[in-house]
Image (cartoon, rainbow, N blue to C red):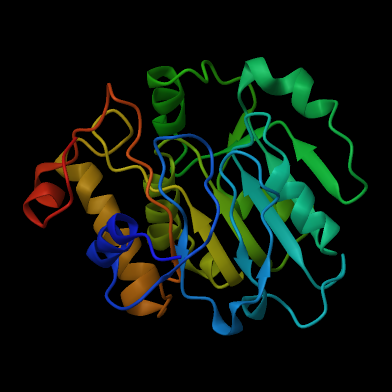
Length: 256
């Protein structure tokens, strides 16, 4: 079914028609996901919390542990996406440095899902996820913080087929750092990037320097590398933090 308000929001991010996936996710503050998926072929995201249905045609032709590698950053006890990708045949590496969730995460069992008590950072002194966690209910970090290149090197991976990222604002510096110093790591992203994009002031999008990181992300992935938007899932965020950067507001992104 078409959801007019969701389609209107999606067109702010990219023009064209989107199809609304006929299910709700997370809670009452989110609209249905709306997608451009060739052939309407999906790998179901598991139906739990921040559920994502991944376009099948964007994944390797054969989904096996050897041909399909998934990195998932930001778990918070929700394993639906990670387990569904593993059930589809992929090898999944799940990352979350949040201290209070560590016992719960380490007790999770799936034969093709491996948990790492590690978080994603940009430059070595990057504190964006720590600040984002502190501004939300997730709380303090305890795990090591590494950039994507360091993580891939530790795990011995040369490519990532699906990268899912929800790290309370850390995404901007994480990608800006790679664009500035390790652009070759971005070459390893071969298929699908799934991000919860944080553009509010409390989640690493407050200053002009923050906004420049947003621009760096767009220039590197969209303009230079030709990545295309295939799905939008609107999340207005918590009522206490819905103020977006003034430049984004002037371009039409809604406040509040």
